[in-house]
Length: 142
Image (cartoon, rainbow, N blue to C red; front, side):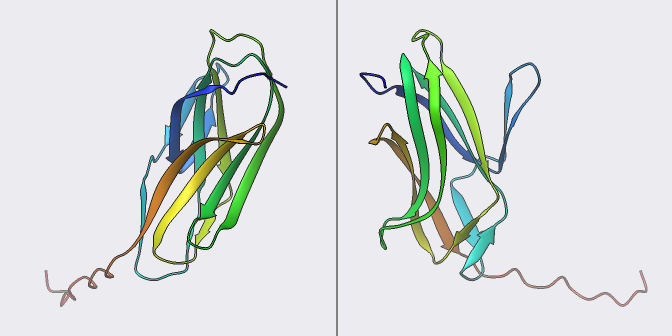
């Protein structure tokens, strides 16, 4: 394993991360809040884009989606045995999860863990909103 942890240069929460055949990343639907008329609610797509610098060695990464009020890990993804021996070249990756369940309104955390150490924490807000009113009925005489 590496002697020191990498530096987080970019961390984005989004609907989806796509890597093209030429190695470019597309980050689709960046968000910080999930709005819902009631809870629990399922957010069908969830991705994380991560750019790290100063990597020189082998790393194990875990991305955890947590409810900090309950101390509960709701979902996680792991990248094991990541080898990167070019500290001047950034390492990029995208992780897509099939979706996430927000059990209640409040603040959720996304943790990046590297070789067992907490490397980065970001937050997401789940917010209850009123349902929009139905569209007005038309008489069909327009």
